[in-house]
Image 1: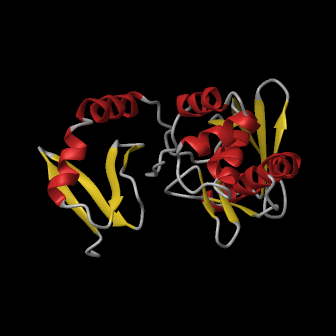
Image 2: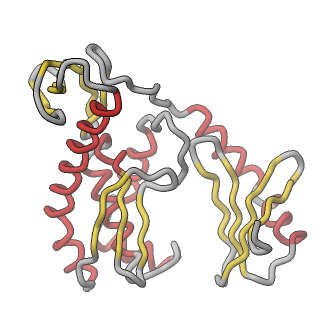
Length: 242
């Protein structure tokens, strides 16, 4: 492990301690398990880091309790009768015989249909859903990105949709590249718009400071409401954090 990344133990709690080239201390409690991470300036000592954790102990425990209570999806097998989320709604899956690599369509009466070859593997059926989800998110991106970039006075970056195990989204300002978690296709489009706007603001401001919040509020006054809606939905069954 790098000398700039270590694990501290505060009481019986492990804390990921990261020293990097920043000015302020950032303490995070990450879903789904409530893992604690402290990012701090290069020169911060381990004793000072532990103190920073202790001073926010009640807040950390509150966040961990919230994550423990949050609903989780069970692993999906992509078979008849399963429930699947799309655009904030829950659908009952119907599997029908088809050809090719498989396709997914939303039908009426709360049903979503997967068409695939008879006997197709779980991986093939999963891939068909991923393709469907990716197309949906790309359409939402194309619909909103020009508006947000114009409001922020930034050039449009490259946006990629991919399965991520660490965040809802990320922004590499230097390379002007934004990544959006494929899981966002399961959430309401308003939540996706919040994540897209959030990452675009990072093209202007690196950290979540007051300037960042002001810019985000300028293009999305109800961003905190959308964030709360996003956090109310079930987390994916696999291990990831934000």
